[in-house]
Amino acid sequence: MAEQKDTKKQQAPAKAPRQAQHAQATKAVKEHKVDAQEKQPISTYLLALAVIIVIAVAAILFYYAVPAVTGVSFSTFKTGFQSSPRVALAVTYLNQTQFSAEVPCYTTLLEILGRTRQASTIDFLLINQTKCQYSPTGLGASASFKTVNASSCIEIANSEPAILINYSAHNSTKITQSHLYLSANGNYFASCPIAAEFG
Image: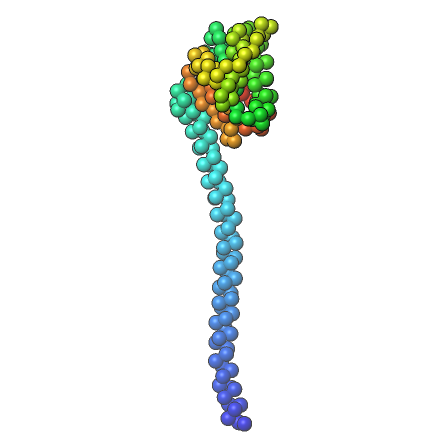
């Protein structure tokens, strides 16, 4: 029995260093967690700052690069459009849902364009995949709509300054010397910010 007690006494010192090591390891893990938590707000802040900088740079590049890519600025197109003796507003769509979404925007555009020019000088073209409805005499009291092939209306839109609007899941604008191509979704057409640019 005395020998067993001695053995237990000999094992006790062996446990003490293990407990000390475990305590040190636990303390190191806790310190590491504290350091990580202290560093996390800084890294989150830096990430947010980087995202803001990227967005700002992209916006600046888009603002200045669009005229260079498309060849002209919106103001150049607008000046040519407004001074032209005849212009077109072409509305393209694939189905009734798309057409319905475009209605608020093209009606607002027609109203605003009609404030600064004779309605008879506006060719209004409703173009689907195969057919087109338009009035050869423009809009106004003498308007008389007829149905023709879509290609006929595309020729009209290509032959004079025109705004061409098209339904799309993604909003985009392309500007050339005599044409403004606007592709947009229902939310955009509901508010139609492009119309204000012609007001």
